[in-house]
Length: 286
Ligand SMILES: NC(=O)c1ccc[n+]([C@@H]2O[C@H](COP(=O)([O-])OP(=O)(O)OC[C@H]3O[C@@H](n4cnc5c(N)ncnc54)[C@H](OP(=O)(O)O)[C@@H]3O)[C@@H](O)[C@H]2O)c1
Image 1 (cartoon, rainbow, N blue to C red):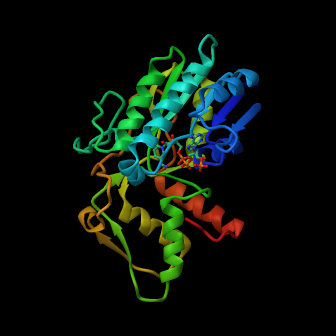
Image 2 (cartoon, rainbow, N blue to C red; image 1 turned 135 degrees about the horizontal axis):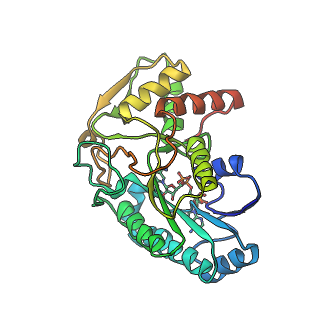
């Protein structure tokens, strides 16, 4: 059984991994282990001696990164450098999770691994720099994913459920952008696919793994509202109307040209997340 060291415990993806991994799992939480602290990270990694580091920890606030690039780079680039430094001299596989936001969105069809990245925002630039650090390690693997959601933490699906419940029956619509398209990914589906990939023993390198198919944020919101049976209109607006600080790619769906398992369709992921949230009786907060 492999020994897994997971950074970013408490986050969406780390929590999903916690539910699928078999073997010894060390969950590194920020309060106890800030990945910017090279010495503490190295001591924890070496004490546990993992076969695989699943490096999910990141500064993930895309708009916040525009105002605080220093912190975004310290966590996403400096922290990743520390992870790789901590395993030097060992045979440990390091798996970094990266993003569709390394692309500029002008291709017009799903991006595959051989497409050239050209990030539009600080977050995307920091993640691309982190990718290069991990791919420079002989046992480095980068998994690009996109538009993650789950039952945990803050994410778009939970935000729409919360807002939809507030507005249901009021006649007031939800307003959601329809000119950004991507591949929404249920964290549980990604964790299961990564686990399967690693058990198959694929070569280190760069992989795209996201929910099958693609849609706009507006279509995603419509699917969430339908899955939850909420009587609320979802009105399409433009990115310009929303006016967010970070520029985002207009079309950043991901596909893969490499031998990795395909994830279920994004809409299956939405139904799985909404069903689980409903079963948990959880008031979505996000
Ligand atoms: N969310 C998406 O839509 C998306 C899309 C594509 C790729 N990704 C990538 O996928 C990975 C997982 O994303 P996610 O959605 O699971 O992220 P998330 O829910 O935001 O979780 C990130 C985790 O990293 C932790 N963290 C932040 N700064 C840290 C530090 N200095 N030291 C240690 N831990 C720190 C956070 O702790 P606190 O909560 O305590 O800050 C949180 O537990 C990330 O690498 C992200 O870049 C995400």
